[in-house]
Image (cartoon, rainbow, N blue to C red):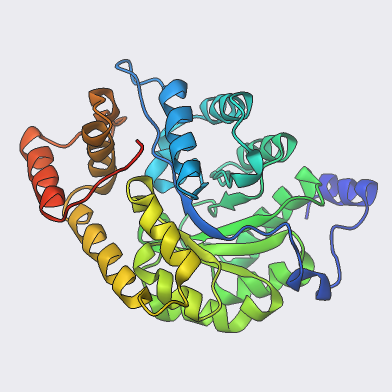
Length: 327
């Protein structure tokens, strides 16, 4: 770690804590969270009013807010835009304890700034991508990155959820990296989201770390039931933007006799959205069911669904009797 970080650690006191404290850490998040889609105005600037309304609806469906995730078009947003949107959410009375904003950036100082701001606002945790531009970096480099963020932010309240999404970032979170972070920062290293799409990988992290209180979120509701049965913490899923209530219900009732039937229904709806570019499809569904066409806008380099694609999506959802009550 840098001399600056080491000095900060000495100033605030050690961030390490006894491993026994991890298991009963009431400050760790669990449940279903949505990587909230970001609405844009016609000039492609973020639309905070629609953003706040959508977040309120998600909370009403018992779903937490992983704002600035992949499906939020987070890496098409500037640090300033993210700070302003977080401020608008909190200013509108949205409970920051229900938020897990994405704060992992390629630039260390951007990650620190966003993470520190999230802590200042009282967010329940942060979802942190590895710095993803350089490929093939060793775990030593990733450890230094996360350690610098933790030390520079310097908050005992900080809970970091590592974001494993190798199909996009192409920089994986490994078992060895998590083991090292847990050894050094057992309180701040709170958990992870596994969006690799490989259940065997998720299960490996559950087997290795779940009993110590490390919270593993599946990256899709497709694995929600398996994750809960294996000691997982829930899921952070794109389609929680549009199908939040039923996903949250399975989390709450996964021990019930109809859990497999619930899972099959979730998979059915997920399968419809997966036939289309995911982010534009989510926005098209919100635009249609919320009767608000402005929701269809994505920021370049993404492109909106074509009219034919949108009609095909809605027709298939109608056949599945899909609804978005209360939107």
